[in-house]
Every structure is written in C-alpha cells, then in structure tokens.
Image (cartoon, rainbow over all chains, first blue to last red; front, top):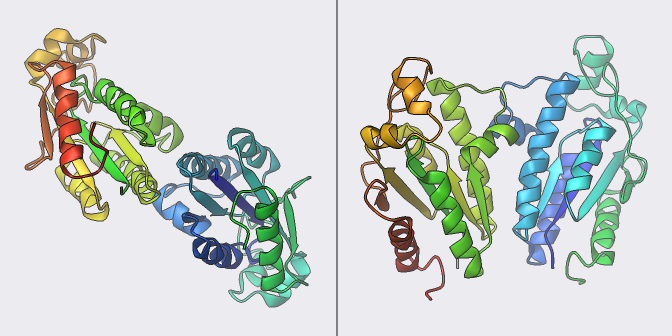
Amino acid sequence: MPGFVVWFTGLSGAGKSTLSALLANELRARGVHVEVLDGDEVRTHLSKGLGFSKEDRDINIRRIGFVAKLLARAGACAVTAAISPYKDVRNEQRAQIPHFIEVFCQCPVDALASRDPKGLYKRALAGEIAHFTGITDPYEPPDNPEVTLYTDRETQAESLTKIIAALEQRNLIPVR
Amino acid sequence: MPGFVVWFTGLSGAGKSTLSALLANELRARGVHVEVLDGDEVRTHLSKGLGFSKEDRDINIRRIGFVAKLLARAGACAVTAAISPYKDVRNEQRAQIPHFIEVFCQCPVDALASRDPKGLYKRALAGEIAHFTGITDPYEPPDNPEVTLYTDRETQAESLTKIIAALEQRNLIPVR
C-alpha cells in the first residue's frame, strides 16, 4: 500500500491534535508506520524563529509538507496537525503529494470560545493575542476536503470512524 | 532490515554530493528506499533564511537530523550531504539516530584548492567569502567515523565500495 498524508486543518482547539493522536493509534494497530507532525512539535524542530505572519505561516506549512511528502514516499503515513489557515498553501501541498487526505475540523468560533480550556479565545477576543486564527487572523476553509468533521457535535469516535472510512475506501490502509 | 542514516561530512568539494548520489543509485538498485538530503536542497526547503554562523549551521544540521531520523524510523535510508563542520552537533544526531553511519570525506585543503571547479577556494583564500569552512571557518573532523574516504587519492568506485561494505557488515542492506 502506498504511503499517504493525512492533513488536518482547522482552528485552534477544533480537535486536530487529539484526533491525530487517536488516528495514529488506530493506524499503528493496523500495522501502518505513522509519524505525527504536530504544529507545536514542528515549530520546535523545523521552524523555530518563525512567527505568525502569513509569510512565516506559509514557510512553516511548506516545511511540514516537504517532510510529510518524504515520509509518504518512504511508504509511511504522515499526519500533520497544524492550523494551516491558508487555502493556497494547503493546495500547493496537495499538488505535490500523491495521496493527500485533507481533514477539515470544522467547529464554530462560538463553540471554541465557550470551551476554551487554555483561555486562548478569551485572550484573543480581548485583543491580547495578535495573529490569532479565526479572531484576528483569517482562516480559509477548504472547498473540497476529503473528510469534514463537525467536532462540536460529533464524538471523537464518530470523527475517527469517518477518517478511517475515507482511508479504507481509497485502499490506503488494510480494512479491518 | 532497519532504516538507517548515512551522514556525510567534509569540506566543500570533498565529494559528499557526488558520492551520495552514487550511493543512492547503488542502494536503489538493491531495493532500498533512499532520500538524499543534500546541503543545498535542505537550505531551500527547511532552512531558508539561515546563514553560516555556528548557531545557524547548528540549527540547519538539527533540522536535517530531525528529518533523517523520521525517514530512518519509517524504514528508509536517509543520506545527508551537508558540510556539518561541528563535531558536537554531529554527535548529537548520532545519539538520537539508532543506525548512524558517519562517512568522513577527507581531502586536504590544498587538493581542494587546486581542483576548485567553482572557484570557491580561490575566492575564500582571497578573503572574499566569510564563513568558508576550512579557510575562514572551522572544520572539526570526526574522531571515529564508521567510514573514512580519502577522496584525493581514491577513485569514486573505491570510495563507494567502502561505504557499501560498511553497510553490509552491519546488516543494513542486502549483500549482493
């Protein structure tokens, strides 16, 4: 089976990291080699020093895409879990990665702001965080993602099932 | 067979890129998935904006090491071909990568300066290039590299044979 990339996109708190960890567990149980390129981890290892302007975010996403592509080419699954707010740069990655599964974690800002475990939305809405995606920075939803998750009204198990189904349908993972 | 990393180190012009390309061909012919992380390519995709101070070189090497480690973990062979002049950062990569084969391309500066196809040594010796490794910037040779190549007095075929032998001995590639 070919390597592939599962590219999560969505606002902060919409479930990207949690679902990418659950997905990684499920895929490993099926014998797939998985590497999760989480937004924060990548900013430590590949993008220290970059900020959150469009230019810096684009560079960060291109680096994640470069590494994800290499991993997929080696037959692995790379799961990326950065916000990746800009459509053009996501589509640039899609264009250069053969098996690219875009997973849109859709969740209204209201829902995120009312959950807000880290208090980030509260601070962003109070104007204390510059470049906060969805509040003071744009988020461009994908037009045709392979999977759309409604993380404010699906259980994590339901969301995970949708991703797995999309991968099985495309013969990227063994059916179980 | 486990994934592994072949880490070339040596001065500019000492043969790292040429030998890494020859090595990649030979390994692919044996069915090994290989990715070459060449110094220049990496500076485009992972490290644009970094310079040649010790600090920036170290960051560049750590990024290469991070990607090489992920590839090796996925069962592939990553071949890195950056100058990587500093011993401590090379050893840091060695410490975190299970199968790490350091290949030292040893070649005296005199020999490099007399070949000098790009005219870089001439310019560096004239003081026109700051941070030029071996002239105006340090190069720290490895203490115990797995392979030492004497690229001023070996043929490329001889050098390649030494690397292949080191990989076969360690059961990292199929014997042929």
